[in-house]
Image (tube, rainbow, N blue to C red):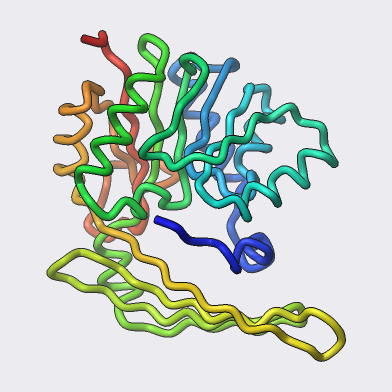
Length: 251
């Protein structure tokens, strides 16, 4: 699962097209609808903490969890500037530990797709269930097969900026359901000097029925699945979906 090492330093630069504010409003609306307007919330795969900070500003007591020390280093740099009181933990989501239960757990930006085995996804679901308050909420997103197979497929994406550039070579194995993208980064350091970095990322597609089965096995109750940022049902051409599950009586 290790990723976002050399890319961590420029992650926010190349992800500035992601409307985090709108995404946070959507998540807050889902939490509020469930009666969760404050309290402890854990963010699995928090990265550089953009969403974590937005939910903190909205009044939630946030815990950010990520297995990339480089990403958390950047998150903590923002923390020093803003004094937001967020607790950041360097942990693999398959083994995360909290000091107590939380009202909700969220995970966005396809963090769950980085879990390449069903057993790992089930492990995370069981841990989430363990750390949720009674009737606590679990909200996470997933990239879909449609996105990997139709929109990305075997494509090359590139972007060039003054601060640096990247090349994204994408491959999707339809039979295995594994999406691979090779990142080549050229980051400006001093004057006209650029340093090259390379990373390879793997993500797995999970069908909705598989996710429902694993949630049930983990003791969580499936609540809903939406086409991302709407309250509409999942469509065949949904690129990203949001899944909501709830803690039920623990055994």
